Amino acid sequence: MRKITVEELLRKYAVGERDFTGVEIVEFRIRDLLEINLSGSDFRYANIQKLVRYTEGIKLNLSCANLRGLNLEYAHFEHANLQKADLSYTDMWCAALHSADLTGTDLSGAKLHEAVFYNANLSRANLSGAHLLDTHFDYANLTEANFRYARKVNFGNAYLQDTIMSDGSVINISRKMS
Image (cartoon, rainbow, N blue to C red; front, side, top):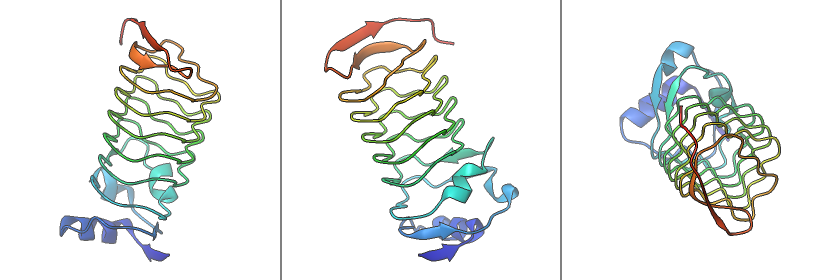
């Protein structure tokens, strides 16, 4: 695994590099991250735990990024743009995704135990086969989201419109969105 700093990562991204397969983020300064755009990047086999654990309040743009299978425990993705990202088979235990945009995101097979999706947009997201023990979806938009074969689902006060349930049925429960 090659080790790089966030400063080096951002420099490479700025000149067009998007393949960060197998990198390990070793250090960064918060000022380097005020608004970070890593859309379309490939982070397969990477270790980006430092980056995602200590970015509370930072607006990350990881839309269309490949984060498949990564350990993202305790990740801070509040207000993050994760549209169409591949987060399948990730371990996102205790991740904070308040007000994140996960439109069209692939979370199939992900371990989302105790993750919080408060006021998040998960419309058209794929959560099929996801593990959702004590996961919170209060005020989340789950329009057309797919929860087929997902386990331990508790929707709380979520907005469900054409949402595919664990058993394959489709449900519509309109609730006032905040």
